Length: 163
Image (cartoon, rainbow, N blue to C red):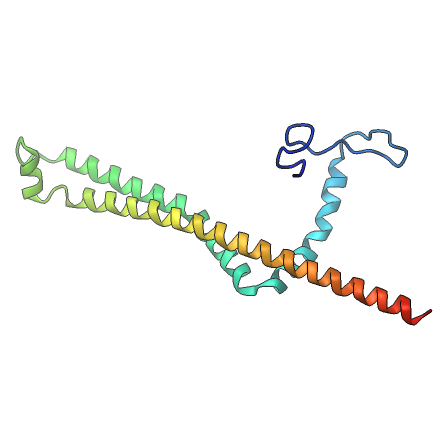
């Protein structure tokens, strides 16, 4: 268990930062936090080497997921526009069946079905993103472990060869 998942002291918080002599340090500065971003390029390169397909799939699915709210809002606008249009026209009859027979609800029903389809597709995209990220994370973890073991083996060989 790690500190991040709530298994350690502090209820999910990271342990306090301490200096070389064990004295607690203050919170990290903004500059220190920004300095960690210099490692981001190397991380992205490692993930790209792990699986190009999964990296592209993850990014592409995230772009689709980002566009979904705009699509849903546009469809909601179409529904509202159609309802406003229908209320401005005279009623085809007092019963709901009269509205269906006149075909005046066809567009609204089509837009509602489209909105439902967008919600279902969004859920599928969210699941696909989770799947791609978890597989990519596992593959990356395995690759880093293998690289670490290979590096350790090379160090051991160099040490024994120089003796």
